[in-house]
Each structure stands twice: as C-alpha cells, then as structure tokens.
Image (tube, rainbow, N blue to C red; front, side, top):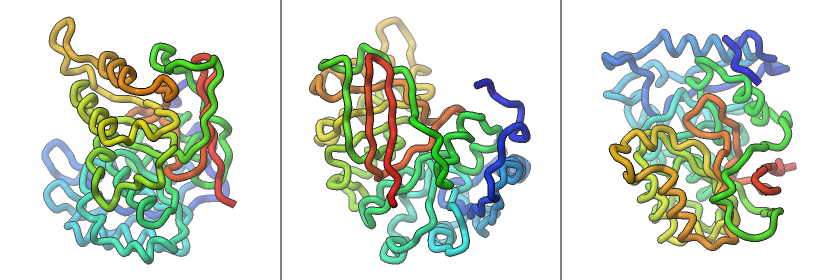
Amino acid sequence: MTKQADSGALKPFEPPRRVIIPAPSYQVLTRGGEIDHERREKAIASIESLGMIPTLMGGVFEQTARFAGTDEVRARDFETALLSTDADLVMPLRGGYGMTQVLHLLDWDKIASARVPAVGFSDFTAFNLALLAKTGRFSWQGPMLMSFANPDPFMVERFRVVFGENPGPLVWEADPALLGGGSAKFRAVGTLWGGNLCLIESLLGTPWFPERETEGGILFLEDVGEAAYRVERMLLTLLEAGILHKQKAILLGAFTNADDAVRFEGDQTLARTLSYIRSRLPQSIPMATGLPFGHIERKATLPVGLPAEFVLEGSSAALTWSMPS
C-alpha cells in the first residue's frame, strides 16, 4: 500500500471515537524551545478527520523545561485521563522522556479498576510494563497524537484494533540467518509484551518490571537513536538477567539510526550486534527481524500483556493475539 498524501483519503473510524490526550512526558517544542502549537494542531486536525474526537488535558499546553508541566501536573492529568468513564481511548501527546518520573505518583489501586484502554510507544513503554506488573491489565503499544501529523495508511489500519476492530494477522518477512534452528515451521504461544529496549532495560530490578507476568512470553523490541554497540549492551543486560532466555520468541522491530555511528569497515553494526546476541541464545528461541514497529511511519499497534501466537513458516512470520472477552 502506498503512502497517502494526507489522512483525508483514509477511511475514518465509525462511529466517532472519544480520545483523551494527556502529556505525561516531553512537550512538543520548536528548535528554539517553545511549544510548537502549529505541529500539535496539525496532528489534532488529522485525528479529527479520522473520526476521533479529542479532549486535551491541561498539561498539553504547559511547559516546564522540556516537559509538559511538572511531574505532579503530568501525573494528575494522566491519572485523570486513565480514570475517565466517558472516553474510548487514552492516547498521549508524545513520548520522549518523563514517564518514569511519574510512575510513583500514580494511584495504582484506582488504575487497576479503570476500563479505558491506553496506547503509546517509546517512553510510554514504562507505563505499559508498570501497568502489567501492578495490575495485570493489558495496554497497547502504538501511535500517539504526534504520530498522526502525517499518518501512514498501514499505521491507521493497524490502529483500528484499539477500538475493537480486527485488522487480521500481522505478517512480515524475517531474516532467515537469525531465526535459529529447528523445523521449517515454528509455533509459539505466550504473553506478548515489549516495547522500547532502552525503557525495558531501565526498569529491570524495579517494582515496575513484570518479570513474573512475562516469563514464557513473546518479546518485541525497538529503539531509536541508539548506536549499535549500545543496542548490544542493552540486549546483553536482558540476556545476562535471564530475561531473553525465558522467552519463547524475540521479535525485532526498527532500531532507527543504529548504524549512524559506524566509522570504518569492521566497526560495530546492528547486523553484528544481532548476530552476536543470536549466538548467545539457544537455537530453540527464534529472533525474528522485520517486525513493522518502532520509530517509523509504517508501524503496527501491538498489545502488551495479551496471549498471542507467533508462527514461522520458513522466513514468513505471523503474529495474532486473543482479545479478552
């Protein structure tokens, strides 16, 4: 499917969906450090054209250094959004950094009984994992408001899942060299979880990491702006902590700009990093590259904390999951 020029050519969500937009992390800023109202309004107009009715929390318009308000403001707005009883979705302004600052300020007992689904990626990974660890609830990894400034058709179609629509299996081609051994056909069933590699690694050893809930799971990973050697260092941390060995499969999305720091032939590349991690894992645990997810326009929306099935036939990969009844 080719990229559309704007969201006007895309099928809108029906019926219209009520979306609350808090700002628990960074603010949307210009290069000069001021709030970029123009970019934000462009994204709002885009989701409105797609049939979403946005309600913006007050912190969206606030700025404290690089953040959308103080820790307390961001936590209050985010919790209020999560506890809403008249919305279809909580979708943050953007990621960046800041979610880990507010986790300890949230009332997890109240959030445990909330029913509005939440979606985000990147820095939002900290909330995805904390929610699973503290409440057992699932949430979504997927686009945030600013992802819709120039919406990709594939992204929009896969996003429909947060509103209860079924976009069908997620299918892609993986690098055969990293898949591991075993038969030509592989099937794994387990809890699907993951997100941003840097955030996942940062939560190890904290109350926010759902180690018990993710054992025997299917882990998906992505990152942006991390050189290949840093990606290796973070993957090694997960490996040495025993997390990777406890997974049934590891799905790798985009590691955007990982090779930007390569300076000479033989320098550390993403391919070398993944090959090395592959060599440290049992052949029975496949590493499937090519997952359409990450800091890229063409990204899927994935659940964190739902039972899923991952199937390989040769290098053809397919992922499905079961929604709660």
